[in-house]
Image (cartoon, rainbow over all chains, first blue to last red; front, top):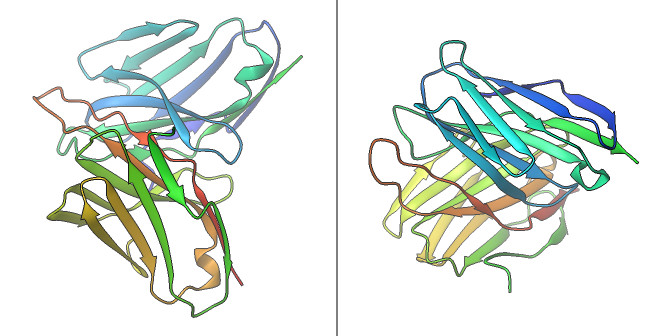
Length: 112
Length: 117
């Protein structure tokens, strides 16, 4: 079963535009993480936000977390063609921060 | 050199065959994981190990077994492969979590593409 569900499933934008992806989850979390996957390759960790944090930045990435709504968003500013990939949220439940549960991902396509 | 390596990278096999996928890491992490990814979907956890003597089933462990031969090595076996085990398999590692707001960022290998005919 998927803890996190990303929305939209697919997103296509022009280079230079911002891309926003959303993640909703069901149970209380210790932290929420975002990963990126280029086609057929392993996932790469992008950013982690803890349950007591509301916003976090890393370069062109901005992540927000609303624990009352059990949702998170990932914003990629000034997108580039190289940002084309699948993006997954993953949650570490507060009951056991020992494993991650991944959502089904958002496929982002950035057109040059 | 890659921190997390998987062998083989691609494998085609037949129904009923026994298959072993291997994972090695040089990150010195205690925790290792095996995931399966089906096309267009997220990752599902098969097994995870927090140290050599601690192995746990994930959400889809049926039809799979694992062995943690050393801190750096974690192998996944399909005792009798079936076509619906055709998927992309990933190994991952993470450092031991500490404290109430511990984190467990995971580092992934490049994946093994397995096809069962």
